Structure formats: structure tokens, C-alpha cells
Length: 205
Length: 255
Image 1 (tube, chains in turn brown, cyan):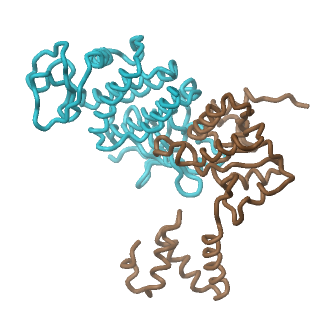
Image 2 (cartoon, helix red, strand yellow):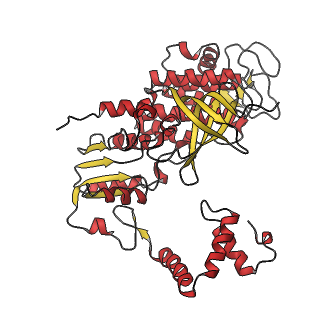
Image 3 (cartoon, rainbow over the protein chains, first blue to last red):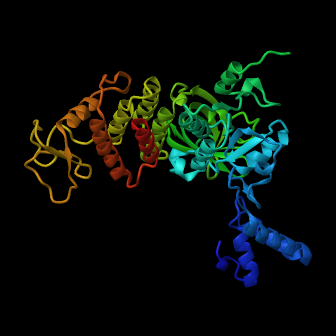
């Protein structure tokens, strides 16, 4: 959307609409609604929003160890001496760390790849944080790498690539179980998921 | 009479990408309608019923409804998952190159059943012998054939004389092999070894399901790869994106 699309709007308002329109999932109409909502906000709330954007852009960096987004390096997880330093869980995106932390069942460290191998989109090992992972594994006393990439074709390819590069490194490589989602339905589950669920069945205790 | 609102299709999933909050935009190549792009609503939610059937390199039977811009997938059922292919990194990468090339050479609303059958049989062959590059080379050559772009391998493109064992040249833009006596002004020529010419001729008359058992050394494989990808890139008018990852894997294997 260009400024010419809002000929009667004030230039500053048209600019705000234009900027909001760049956000994912925000079309021209939504951008206009958000812009008018921001104009009607009390000054304090509008400036808080602007300051929050400013602060996040100025202070967020990659953690030197796990490559997660943080405002101090090492991040709070890597700096926590209570975490198990022998386990590293490899995830695709920072949001995956939040999802796993919500489970409260993993106490090791993380490594965020910021993507997956995607040959179709020209994303190779050098475009994601794989080199940092291998460097870290050669330096630290890690005994297990838990691969938690998404169970998609690209996630699986990334898992295979990591496993292949760690062959002979005396590190146990595991990946999260594949199977049925809680609340799902057996009838509508695809056969690959069902067969993986079958392979990964466990004894009831 | 307008076409029916609902229709069914048997299609190979070529790729998918996230769309809005939880939808998936799926690119498919169907037997009856050629390339299709359709939306799977809510497919990225963990309890979604569709997503497992819409992974790339899956043959699915779909029910779709026509939309204003994109059709919407309402049902999907896996017909063939190519499981052996998906258990090897090299085979997955080769399979993804098949998907990329079908996407590049296939056209929307333009059925090409030979291309559909070729892609399917190639994915099966790659799964059967994941370490063998021959199925991919065969696919690349026959893709040109089913797209009406098969290079001339028997006669000189310029003088139409029979090609005898000699120092031949090959030109992607010229459309095939040149004998040593012909030197066109425009075509970009590259040397073509007799061994490579023989393998190309053999592949041209072979079927994907009954590929000859050939052991290609590194030099010959690289020559065939360069000729075929060069020709495909000439017609596509862009780089084949999956190539760089495949080359990286090949380098790692040699190291």
C-alpha cells in the first residue's frame, strides 16, 4: 500500500497505516483500523507501544550459546546453573523454546536453529545456526542431543542432517516421539502418524 | 453450465507454505488438472486432520471446493507416502528436486499425465535405491521429453548427420548434440564425452521402473549432472534451488 491510497489522510497517519500494513497477516483495511485505534489510545499507552518496539529492537540479541533471542548473553536458561548441561534440545524457532518450557518436563539447555533445512527454498546448513550447534557440541560436555524439529519433511531432513554429522561423536542423538495429538481422532489420522504411534507404543503401568 | 463447485483430484504434493494464522497453501500436481494451488484451512493446528496427508512428496486423493482465488481442500487421504524415500536424507533431497522441477515445468490448468506418472515412478525408484543417482538423472532427461524439449542425441542438430564415436559437443540452447564438423554461431557448446552420450541414449530409451543397472564413476556422474541441470536451467531460466544442497551432500559423502 502506498501513501497515494490515502489521499485525504494526514501524511503521518498514512505513514502509520503503511508501516502497519507491512506486518504479517495485516491487510490494508486492518492496517487502517489499527492506525485509528492507536490514534484514539491515551498518549501514555501509544507511547508505551512505540517505546516497547524501540526497546526490543535496541536490546534483543542472539544468546552466544543457544542462539535464542535474549536481552543479555548468555540468556537466562544458559546462565541457570540448575539446568542439566549434558542435554541440548535442538528446536527450529524461539517460540518452540517457550512451548517446551511450558511443559516443565525438560531441564536441559536449548539450541535454536532459526529455521530448518529447506532445499526447495534455497536454505542450506549455512543459512541456519547449525555451524554454531556443531561448534558448541565439540566444546561442551554434552551427552545427549534431543532433536525437537517439527515432524515435517523439512524438519525430518534437518534431524537426519544433524544425526549424520554427529555420527561417531559419542553423543546420543534422540528425537521427540511422533504420534497422536491429545484430543485427536484415530479415524482421521494419517497412516504415517498412526504407524509412528504404533512403533512408539509404551507399556501401561 | 459452470463447473461443479466440488471436485476430486489425485495429486502429488509438491510443496506447502504457511498462510495466515493456521492455514497451509499447498502446491499440487494432479493427474487430471496439472498444477494446482489450494488452501487447507486450519491445517497447521496440532489436531488438524488434513496436515499429515499434505506433506511434500505424498500422493493424495483430495476433495476440493472452488474458491474465488484459491480452491479449498476439504478432505485428503494418503494414497502413497513414499516411506522408503523419506528415510534417507539424500533421497529426500533428490525427491525435493523432483518436486521443484515438476513445479517449474508443470502448468496450472494444463494436465500432463506422462509427467505425473514419471514423477510418481521416479519417487518410487529413488526410494528403492536411495544412494543411486541414476533415477534422478533419468527423471531429468525424461522431464525434458514429456515437456516436448527432449535433446537430440542421435543426429547432429545442425547437419542431421548420424553421430558416430568422436569428439562431440552438446548445446542446451541448440537442442542437443553437434558433430565435430558443425560449429553454430549462437549456441553455447560444451564438450560431451562418448561415455556420457551413451548413458544419455540408454536413459532416453529406459523406463523409470526398469532402469538399467549401471555404475557411474564420479567424473561421468558430474558430467551428466552438468549437462542435464544445465539444460533444465536453460529452459527454466533460473537456478535449480535444490541443487546447491544436493551438491553439498555429495561433497560431504566424498570427504
